Image (tube, rainbow, N blue to C red; front, top):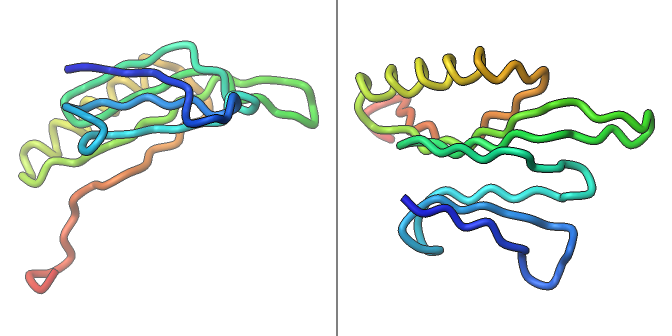
Length: 112
């Protein structure tokens, strides 16, 4: 798998990372580097994890935070494996703030 970390467009405040074959498909995560300073990027089969410092402007402090962008598998057994992997990563990282986002591929009914 290939990870590209680039500056987005003409803005010097936005950074992003993409996991996938090309820019047309895959998982894309963007952040404002004035608010979040990336220190680590990790990828799994169904997720992209960005760890860094979330800057709290008012207090002039920063706390370690993690953003995990998920593209959930469709099969229940694979979903279970993914959530176990995320749980393990969360315990190992020790970040106090987590943002888990994206497409979890949950279906409520047959009509969906």
